[in-house]
Image 1 (cartoon, rainbow, N blue to C red):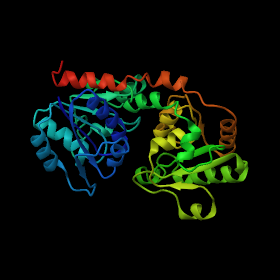
Image 2 (image 1 turned 135 degrees about the vertical axis):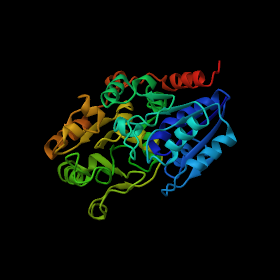
Image 3 (image 1 turned 60 degrees about the vertical axis):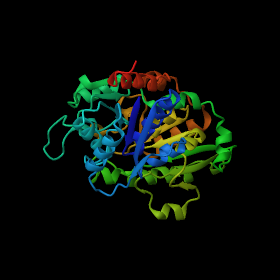
Length: 360
């Protein structure tokens, strides 16, 4: 089979790369389309994208349609996120126009309806791939409540879960040494996110600038500094941390790295609502969500929405979570059960790719 895979954002690429590797192992012919934001994910796993677009706001419909005509794939696999004139939606529109079956993979646990709706005409469920891979039953139920079309959805698990299941036994101390961290200390990592850029005026009840004082003042004023090393991982698209923090505190500030290596080195993962919390929990890290003054109607963290993780609101609660994380070893069992993380997500998606391409 000829399969074309394309992703606008890093989150979508985190899904597609594991499908791509599995398809290659099965001797299928693949072509890959990325943006300058998502290309690194493919490169981290040894696949050089065939096409890479710069995200500069230029509509990609024509370019993508020309590529589809040139390659003539049996099936297209895409992400489903980003501006509606960019890669994921250009693939959906182009594939539908050329009558090529397309399967899109949901990459995160938020903003479901917006992914399918037309922002210009306000038409709901305007963007309709043939099939949509959804991570778990909780997500499908939330999507249905938001008005998404459940008839094109199937539960697959997240493709990255398969990689995590194979990789979580990798030596944590050895990974710390690879990254230049002290292998004898706990690694506490904050995965940042530009909340204010996406949700201005504190529409969630908070933004990252409310979180940073809780994070830094608790870590550096209330904990034994010799017991841990702190890594601040910037968001891959937008920088978030004011320079005063870099000037006033000693820690590892990382803009770009192999995120998988960092995740495997991390003992305590902290964020607001990043999917890295879910991936880290499945890697047996202690995970902490900080969302002060959260408007619970706009909670973007599925772990707290599903009440399998408490929402940390203040320094006292955060300090308690940190101290328990420094003393205990994390467990992934409850997260594996909830998220359908059985190591077979890619197999379920490839089975659907075969059905769309009439491949036996």
